[in-house]
Image 1: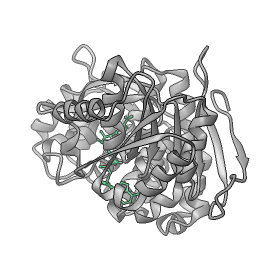
Image 2: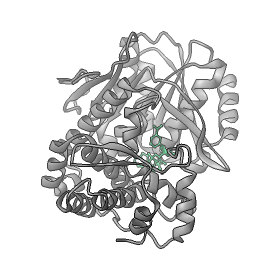
Image 3: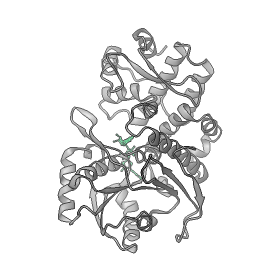
Image 4: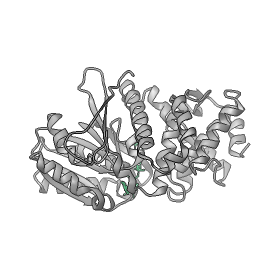
Length: 380
Ligand SMILES: NC(=O)c1ccc[n+]([C@@H]2O[C@H](COP(=O)([O-])OP(=O)(O)OC[C@H]3O[C@@H](n4cnc5c(N)ncnc54)[C@H](O)[C@@H]3O)[C@@H](O)[C@H]2O)c1
C-alpha cells in the first residue's frame, strides 16, 4: 500500500505481549513516522523512543486522571528503564480541558520541570489528551517533539495519526490548532479493554466510516464479525485498528494539510458536526452524531441517484448492528440548514458533502440542492 509499511513481528521482551504490527506514515522527503500496534506494549515506549533516536533526557508525560489510574505506571517505568527522566502531568478528564488556558498551564508545568528544546512530550490518552498535549508541544519553545500514545479506539484509528492538534475556543471546536507530526505513535490494544461502551461505539463509527469510503473488504469484515467486534475479541480489534490506522496513514501521507483527499475522511461529519453543535455537545457523542450523519449522507446519495437502495441499506444496518443511531435527532430544520452553511466545508455559499457512490468509494459533491437536503433532514 503506498505511504505505508506493514510488518508483523513478535514483540521483544514483555512476556504478556502477543504481537506487534508496525505501520508508518511516509511523507515525501521526510523520515517515516512509525505507528506501533501491539498488546501490552506500553512498557516498550522508552526503547521505541531510543530506537527512533530521541536524545531527550526529560519527557513530559501528559495524561488525565482516568487514564493515569490504569496506564501511567507502565509508561513511566518503560521510560525510566530506557534512561529517560519522566515528568508526569495529570489533568482532569473531559473535553472541557481542551482550551488555551490549559495549554498555558501545561507550559508553566513544563518550564517548572525543566523541559527544554531537546525534551519530548508523551500524550497518553484519548483524542482530547492527544490534541491538547500535541498543540502545547507544537507551541512550547516554538515546538518540541511529541509522541502519541492513544488509548481510545477513536484516537487509535483517527485522532493520533496525521498531526492535527488543536484546542477549542468558546465560540467553536478545534479552532485554534497546528499541524505537528508526532515522532512516533504507540497503540496498545490492551488499553481498549477498559474503554467504556459508549466510547467503544464512538470509535466504531469512525471504523465504519473508513470502510464505507475506502475499503469494501473491511465493510464486509465488519458485517460478518460484528459480534466479535462488539465483544472486543483481540484478533478482531487488531484487524480493525491495523486496517484503519493504515488507511489513515496512507491518506495523510498523500494529503497532509487536507487540500483534497483527506477531506473525504469527513464523511458523515458535515451533518454530524451540526448535530453536535445544536445539541450543545453533550447529548450526542461525536460518534453518534457522525453515525446519524453517515446514514443521512447515504439517504442523500440515494435521492441524488448516486447509489442504490441496497448500498444505503447496508450502511444503515451495519451502524445499527453496532448500536449506533441512524436517525437525526428532532431539531429545527431551519437551524440545521443555517449551521450547515457555517460548516468549514462550505465554499462560496455552496453546500458540499462527501458522498459514497458505492461501498468502499467516496467523492466530494459540491452545490447540492437545498430541497434535497431538506428532504433528508425531514427523514425522507
Ligand atoms: N486530531 C485529530 O485529527 C482528531 C480527529 C478526531 C477527533 N479528534 C478529537 O478527539 C477528541 C475525542 O477523542 P476521544 O473520543 O478519544 O475522547 P476522550 O479523549 O475524551 O476519551 C474518551 C473518554 O475515555 C476515557 N479513556 C480514554 N482511554 C481510556 C481507556 N483506555 N480506558 C478507560 N477510559 C479511557 C477518557 O478519559 C474519556 O473520559 C475530540 O476532542 C476531538 O475533537 C481529533
